[in-house]
Image (cartoon, rainbow, N blue to C red):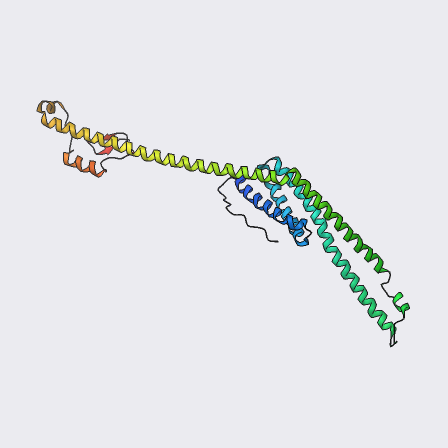
Length: 274
């Protein structure tokens, strides 16, 4: 039986999240065979045994992610695998016994026919001395034993499944898996919200820095204008070299006169202070 594919596995995500996705698929796969297996369908019982084995193996590796429900389910899956395995052994053995019996009957018929020669009818005594006459009873009894044992094992399987259903073994495992997936979903959503807030804060900080720098440029422009209108004040101030009003206006409107991430500016040298 080909295993069902597990979707949305992501190696960048936590182990528990990926393990939950695998366990979820393996558990659902095993449960899907239960109705037909309980109805006595041989192939469904065989497929359910394989599904239980796969569930058991993944729980042996990742069960610690889901706590006690996973540990209980792992042991119950192992027991279920054993019961269904014994049923499968009977299903394999019985046809072999019957096939061997058919082979012995065919060989004995050929032998008795040859001993009869050209007789018009068969002497019963020849059949009583068939080469494999002592083998039939043992093989027939073995076939009876295997068939009866299979019926008992099927009763045991049915009772065991009903008991686990009553105890909620598989439901508790499924709930533990769902909680893990829900927690992972919430963490992912929280991380996305935090990233949006962080990106928004970065944009706001850039706008604030740009506005602050533009105000500094305007302060310099206004100071130059005031100094130009007051000769007495101009004489007391150190000259501000090579900053023209037209240059300031052009770069203020172009948005390239300042660096949005800068804290201080040396406007006289036209560079940012580190």
